Length: 359
Image (cartoon, rainbow, N blue to C red; front, side):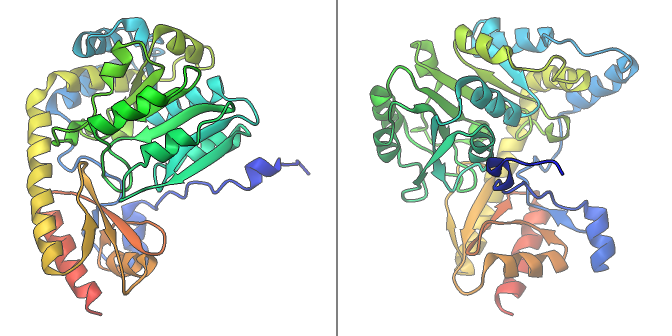
């Protein structure tokens, strides 16, 4: 029998949801809507679709291992050097690359809770130590996080906006935090949802990068760009940090179709503007109707809303909604997270939620 180390045995694996078609077959329902994974409800850019169709003819060839054209496009867009960008199979892979590159067994990584579960999972997988700091008022408690830094700390993870709460940390808070972070600590700022933010106080992480601070900024094409199925994300950091991470990155980790679609998606500013407009209108609709139902939620700067419950547990709400063809994400026993969808999807969620909470 193969022995599995204890630090692997104690990891709680990610449990993927079943395909919608299978759920509908099992439950005997049809016409389900998925509001569980923070996806772009209007889909990818038409320019990206066109690029995908064109790229289908070259699938017998390995992808460009350097992501040359996408690297050049992002270099120009972000005003950074090409060697200051790294690509991953979603930003998840870049998180893993950062942990594998900079942590050894016994090293510490600081992160908030609740936040993106991948941080703690990967740190545990390399026998690092997770230092968990609870959220304060639904947001990262940066003051407490910086106070927990020790000589063993190698990484600090900050999701801004945070997943699952949709909250942000402000420019003032981040400035104070960064001033206190020691030189030997890498701050990983996960900005998967930053394009959705409208708050003028939102922290500009690129300013710390341009000042030469030890920061790795993560972004993705999965959310506002609507390319979740192609799995492509990117990170920006100093050239030395990127070079170190590239030592452990596997070759050809970004498939050719993802590269072509991402280049095209970057050019489609109209699609981004449309997506943001749909999200803002949906947000206001959901706020209004959740208020009317007296359901508590956390105001969001992302494309999802964190709802905290009182009378019924999240698993019960999740199951009741699921049986009516509305798929959301349960978050422990007293909260759910719902993606802001198309107008008709938002309406159906509210109408279904109304019947569920009155059961």
